[in-house]
Image 1 (cartoon, rainbow over the protein chains, first blue to last red):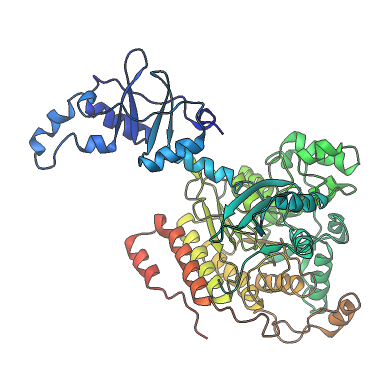
Image 2: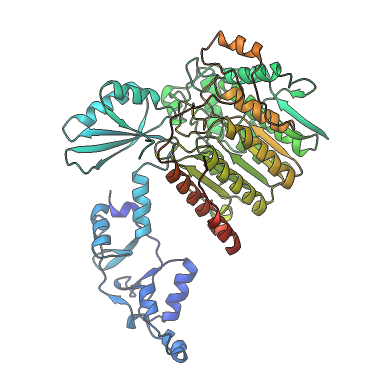
Length: 210
Length: 397
């Protein structure tokens, strides 16, 4: 999956010469935490977030608050923020987010700003990837980490005429064991579970003791 | 105003997928015959359901979907198209005249609501209703049309009223929730097993409604193996808070019987004790907040003999102002159905032990109560928060 599939393209921007007060007002009005700063050619020149806003004035000098708020955005913005390209993989973007503790990633082509991706967009995408938003039952199978296992299970499922919405494979403490989680489009997964168990698969389910 | 009527006719058995399908109309037959054997149906008004019109269905469902269901019931829908609408699947296989079969259940629920809101009856029970998984343009989870959503939309159009929908089926009431997700004239409260493994996977506390409807979708997902005390504590607390905040004109309850420990599809551990109290508490809430107006519906429940007839009869008991039925089940009923199944129960209460002791009960009780608190937190004041935090979630044995 590529960034261009999940980024926001109609994003709010601000100019470096605008006031800090204006940035604060934009954030409040649009309920956002970051604004990319662009010049007249729509090129990215910086990023301003809540953190920068907080550093713009001091609570110990309330008398200068009004004045501080009239300073330009360029005086406090982050220059040369980390950016990504619309054709980057979202996995790569995700790594940027946690390695650099980002919460907002401007997306550029050359210098031109084409979109914004936030941690919220990323989380929403991961929730969608789990398939949890469509009506379905989840079947989890503990399997050996060897070739052909997934195909065997999928073959069994195909015979039950039930549609698979989603497959996730996740690791366990044991490197040779994985858990395969299927989201299947049925309210009655009992037949499938019985079939898998009959073929010797370790199907997980709610457990009274853990 | 009369006190109570139930909506039923044998034609409702036409909503039938196949003999082996879990959602089977034998459940209606079992319940009605049990109530009959109890003598509970004497001097009680029974009203036959009518067909819902296309205009009514279109309040919730897409035109092309209704058309597809009609064609499917005549065997004229191509398998490819059927799949698009969730029809002809393992969950909702095609059957003859499926449109009329499904539209009759919708009509029954509309009538049940109409009879109450027009002031003819205080309480009604449509046992064949409660198909809460039906979507706008797609069949899902054994449900073709969403009778409840259609009926609520129709009632709001006609009476401009506020409806509280309470769903105690073990599965999340997703179809009803999404139909009214951004509206503030319907409040949905669904209590269900978590979607960790169970269909449909949704129903998290964080699904609270959107836009105008924010705060009007309430969800309590219970851990697997939740027992009576924990369930009832959450149910009573959330139901009365919802009434207090929302001030409904009508309460509609969906009485799925599949949260019972014996149900084959789910993993909750409720016993008949919960199912005796659930409808009694609902009637208590109606008496306090809606001048007694309440419409009860059926729903899921896949242990046909052991669980469903007793659960729905206890709903009937509450709606007819009785204490829960207790003691032995009528002999004639037990004898009649024993011919078909070896699992027919003989008493109203369950035979204990129903399930092995659950080692992590305290943990489950703790977690469930945290869920209730997380649900209510944005909507209650500090005094209430203190009060909720003081409640002990542990049952004492």
